[in-house]
Length: 451
Ligand SMILES: [Zn+2]
Image 1: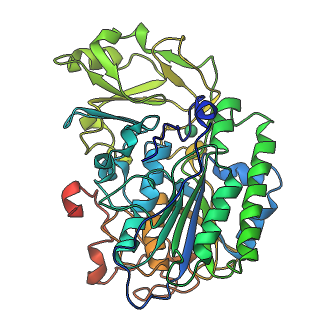
Image 2: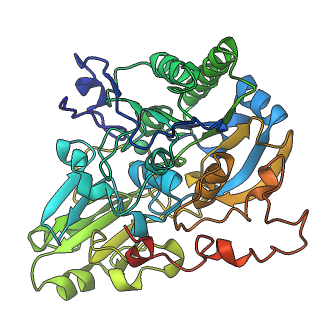
């Protein structure tokens, strides 16, 4: 396999790595191809990394508008904690909170196997990290469908023995336009070869948001440029005769908050760095105390700074769904919005960041969609990003695996209601018993997933 050391976002190294890597498009056999190929609905999920919900109102975004006019928009999307790239992209394709799918951060340590994961090293290609859940591209292939992936986080990793039928090896230097052309080609293939489900990822406006800060006027041109990229995708779909056939969801993993060099928390002021290992980065920091030092480190950090909260793992609020996994460290530090946690000021500083509490408006992503499965010109107030998975399974006519989302919460986005639904319920209806196993409200634990 091609060695790939390209960080997907959040790193000034991105452009340094984006060199000399060939564009590799890979095909994998369809393990469960039906003899008679089903006429499945088509769905393309597109993520513009770090596209905050309100960016579409900041500059003219005619292509986002076209999707909203012909489709749906959701105003409040509560994504999953922590609001980082890898946890949220895996939540979108599994319907699970990070504590359950196991990709709990961009940088992780698993004490059970004494191994570390970093999105900036080959460690991310170790299947074990990803196999606490099953992504949608694997599920649809097990059902006889086909999938294609253009650089979605985790889509070039073998998970439960499978890659997407068609995928691109991650390479940050491959243009958005090339990724689009590949995806459109995969959707346009012959009936036996065409993909039913596609995922497409682009690194911006996350990188510019980190470097410039979301309040910078320079972000206006970046956002306008993303809208042009969306326009390119739509025109390519149209040229291929797919625009009325492929359902298109455009969303993101998280938003972006403005930082300030005046708002820095220096851990060295409070605790000796010899007493712990720093596992994940600001603004939510996983702290692994050295053997026997848990209480000492915690006591030093508790109430250390009014702009930072320190939790022992067992006290992390239940609403964050961020506790039940060995990869979550014994102490979690969370900065208040706009604050940066460092060991001291010698570390690199960014003007924008994300990772904060997922109920903060600044952390929430855009969400628009259109296509035959969606209503037209409809605005929904709120959803959770874990609801996206059962919605996509419904559109693709496949049975979802157990997940933290609910189709009931988002069925009003659809042009026709699911079979078990009643029209315009005054209260959320109770799903029939057959659906209860996958419409779960309690936290899902690993044993629920029967992997
Ligand atoms: Zn980022």
